[in-house]
Image (cartoon, rainbow, N blue to C red; front, side, top):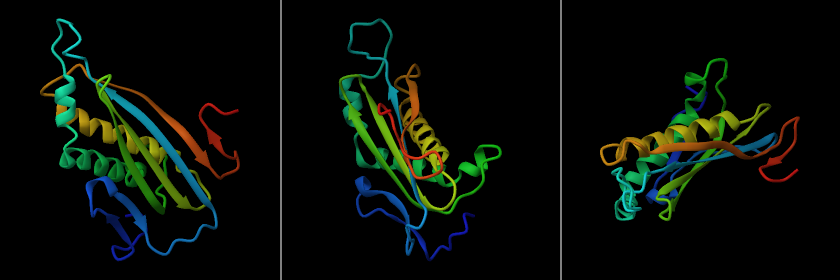
Length: 173
């Protein structure tokens, strides 16, 4: 699939908050990394609007480990399969994909971070961006019965390292 044997690729999942795809025995010769973030924002059912939506209490229930783990695993799977879903994007030998979800109860909503890494001659920005999008679509899927008006927005590259164009960090020149 990605040129990784089943014996060398594995997911660390001792705890749902520690889910990460890694490849054993990788060197950092051409280390590259890309981190993307995005948000899923719910309409607030407790903000006095006439539109039903997700309340802060319902967002708190989504913090359950199984639901968060499903979204994080979906992000990892999407990053690994980016070449299959984006035309002209070639498969990469990824060495690591890390996902993290930050609760944003004040909105209510969630922020998802995906960082993809590889040792090679091409960037991993598309893998990180794909992981973020699919991970948040997974959260949407779990919550759509409560709030179909949720918005996934601001899918963006937060940082990248390595490559001909050098390093990038959003907000820095």
